[in-house]
Image (cartoon, rainbow, N blue to C red):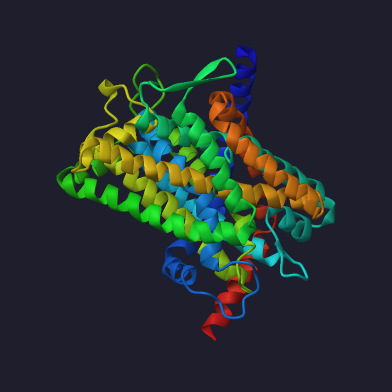
Length: 468
């Protein structure tokens, strides 16, 4: 087992290490230049489109519903746990490099959204099929269908074996257990192992709720996401805002530490590598993991949007990266810094860092503060389960050429995976998920670069029509 874990870790370091990070940033930088910093000059228009429906648009859900479905898969443990991990391992400067990843990632997300709508397939019954597999096949040509299938297989694996199921429900179960039964006082023996009763109940409830939602398809997933995501995002934002208001005098110092550490060339503790490079590595990697720009998952949801204009949906998709990283991750990072929860002497890691920030920063009893964070983490993770079910279903639909029986069976398999998730050993699962997550990015980025001229042409034509 140790040999397997070492092999997985080595593979993960190679696949999702520097080559992937450099490739994603390079694509984002290239698109940013060619699009004339569209993410800056068209951001207000993008938010306007996100909350207003297009008249006579074709699709299954509103643009806002498609955005919330995409956000449901991205806003999750990465925003709460991932930020804490990056700040502790890479220092405050990691937050700055998360911003850089998000800034250039917005251009990539825009391009993905444009291509998703332009090359999607609208069936006679109004059913929508779209995503990287279709803009690879229909945009690059049939001879690249093998590349489309590779993407679909990797994305399917991420959904059923990693980020979509095991890791998310395991995170939910651990959050609930930490709050209700931290000392493992109440256990039930299953298969020779003692589990907290909270783990058992979480497993059953999560599977039932997942089944009730995903059996209803994209429209029900979008409706749930349209309600849960805004409510939880606002709840989390308000909680962080309260912490920052109560520690307002520390914010300038925190921002100063972020900028200083982001460009600190001095050797990091215990080594010769500059602190700047450690901050850069951790920040960019966690930023990409959080907003998924370049991975190719969000375009699958964007393709279902009720719109006839690829550029319009591209702009809406772009706002997802801004909300996920620039707003929510920044709030998390600042709360950690102003409360000092990242101090090395505390010895905290992962979610415990954010928990301490909430417990010490909010003007409530520590139990109430922990409960608020637990609820946010649970719902963010649950909507990620829903979002990734939709992504992986569409991949399977593409691979099986629309076989409804196979897709129907897969839904029950997905529910079962959610049910057993809390009982899985999560370390190897996380590593496997990261590998597949990285692998699906390569075919998608190849397609985005190959079709970048199409994105530029669509953009110019749309804004030319808009002016007239």
